Amino acid sequence: MTFVHRTSNIVHLNVHTISTPPKKVPFVFIFPIALPLKMQLSTKHLLGIRDLVPNDIQIILDTAAQFKEVLQRPIKKVPSLRDVTIVNLFYENSTRTRISFELAEKRLSADTINFTASGSSVKKGETLLDTVNNILSMKVDLVVMRHSASGAPHFLAKHIPAAIVNAGDGINEHPTQALLDAFSIREKLGTLQGKKIALLGDIMHSRVALSNIYLLKKMGAEVMVAGPPTLIPKYMQQAFDVHVEYDLKTALEWCDVANVLRIQLERQNQVLFSSLREYNLQYGVKRSLLDNLGKEIVIMHPGPINRGVELDSDVADSKQSIILQQVENGVAVRMAVLYLLAGGKTIQN
Ligand code: CP
Image: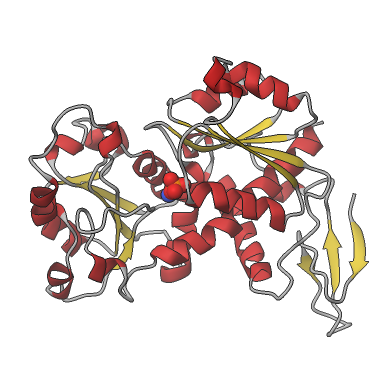
């Protein structure tokens, strides 16, 4: 149902503001129950970018742009998900993603519950499915989940009725990170189409890399993966139609954007390079390298940064870096994802 609401200082999103009178107090359409067809995603869950069609990505990015505009206003809260309850299930450590989802939910007026495996009955042996079913019995509508096991949210999606958002599963996907990365590139360069994006470093263990590759290819960007041969799976070029490069300088000369990835030591159970110092010397992104390119490229990093390993501080903190903009954009992007999935769920029901 769509209805019209007149508002002064409260900003209601979902939100198609009519530009004609009144000018100071705009009319705002709210559609908390049903999304118009053109805003419906083709999927009930967000398990990975692999499952999305380009139109889904476009809808999410465009909706996020509206939410970003709302987040610049003095009152940043909208009532869009007022009757929705969301659980943030974090079985693996997180700073940015967990806070960003929680903030997005609060900005949308959803009720939120935060669950971390440490300190829970998981420590007494309770299974993932039992844990989630118990939480859902308390009338929870939507599950945001991070898990160290690749495929954990896909498993859950087969067994529970609620919509699931994957907040990172093992070395598989991190879809909202790729969406916020894409949003940040589009904001900086105007479009993704035809842009050259290099993903640098630990491609093998990076869910950010995989989600970025799926998304960037679907949206018409050119993608390169670059790093040591031991950290780039052999099948990359054939499986994903990406450029593969083992020389950092060549990769930086090629790209418009360098998305520098964290060396994931916690996921490496064998020696894949001689030392962190050696890695920094050969594959660390340094000021001197960037100064000799003859062009200014955009520097990104999903965080957390290993400063002085994959990225030097004077690059991470420079004007070329949009790392903190990525984090800022994460809230708007996650608001868009939650809003679209919650609306879609209601329509289906
Ligand atoms: N980028 C990212 O996922 O960071 P966190 O692990 O801190 O959530």
